[in-house]
Image (cartoon, rainbow, N blue to C red; front, side):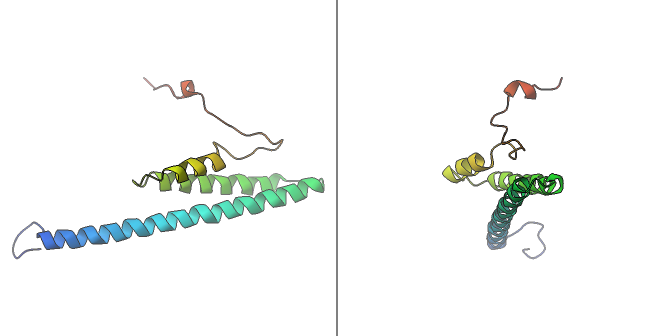
Length: 122
């Protein structure tokens, strides 16, 4: 701070803005890495479930892990999109790949949401 003042000087403010930019950029990278990590987990979970199904084995535990990993992936993907940067076509592709929910046993998946389900509470 400038001597005796309660405000930042222009140079101090610029320095802090630089730090904030670095922090934001690094957080975006951390969140993107988390999306990538959980996408890999989802892929591995699906492969394991398919193998279990082919052997008529119980998939309950593996399916639970798959749904958890899908939720983590989707959550981090949404966080990445809310970070203030317009991801453009990348966000569209990411949302199309993840959809609204994990693929359910029986090869079904939620494809859209009815906007009437989200009427405001009065």
